[in-house]
Image (cartoon, rainbow, N blue to C red; front, side, top):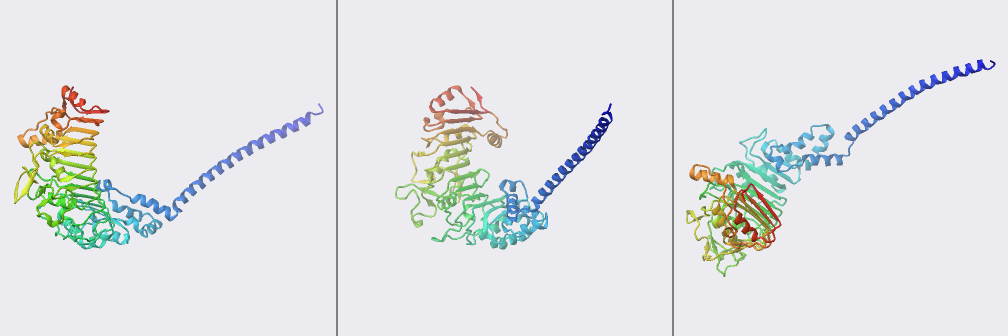
Length: 495
């Protein structure tokens, strides 16, 4: 064939091209793989550069999030003040940024004193949060007094969270009573774990200077544990919103109890904006008489010389919305509301003592259960109305207490009602009285036995807890609550 040679030549060339194509395809694949590898490496390098090339402003914003803390962190033993120190040891760039930013050193934990001194210097003029815990941190010096260094930082205090021994608390109370103004202080929480001499004040009594501006113009929250109100400086508290008092003592109360009605009444008269009041396992010792005759004003506007020092007039807290009291003497519960008027009260939470326990008085150095005191003249048929109360939670130790606590009180606009039995406290009380714990679940009393006015037309939510329920009593109770929308029964028996 004449073209046979030409065809063979073409076929050979095609095979050569196919081989070259295969070879170049393999090369292209390697090039693509190399390209992808280089792109991946470039991405990694860029990411690595992003960490190190953050603008200082962004980096410091991240640092501020890192050093933020709350009370839970402190209670759990976290070394909240050491976070800025940890940041400063990462690299030279971070160290320079941290050391030059005073706001990162705003937490001063005196539990590691004197190691806190460099942090005081680095915080410069920043508002600071001063803390001290019961458990000392590494480097703590037990024999050094804090009063001088505390006084130097006092004008910058933003919050003071201090738990310590009596000796350490003395340093703080001396600074608070020094007459220094605390223009930035918003939160004050003081506590002594075990106060050995509860009847001995830890600070000198400061004199009240009428007309002088408040030493705590921005203070919004106070929480005291085993610290008396009389141990704080006598100054107006125009911005105080929340007050929690924890002053536990063995029952009956003792004359050594520094939580007294005289100091409470005086203190509350300086808190015109108070919204929340808590007595935590605390009952003030009644050491004053209350004048209820018409010539004395209800809001306490009489001049100081109008009454003897052991007499007071009922006080009004116009903005108080929440009150909690544990553990209140049931028969004398109404007396507090007759002494302290709470016209705007919306929420009341009460933990009741056993029915036989009374509020203790301390008159003429005599400690005894309350009788007809402290009212002068005597209130013959007292009725306390909480016209704005919407939420009432009552937890009783026994049925007697539940049936006596509210016989002199009315709640015409109540919307939520919780009735609970304090099982563990009842067991503890019965064991202390008889030596044997009583675990019987009490029967829930009838609505008429608990409340002066059993009809609750506006009630929408009812919760019952830890009671034995009688079908007849429950049916009668529900008949008084025609607007009820939600019924919750927790750990109850019967029915």
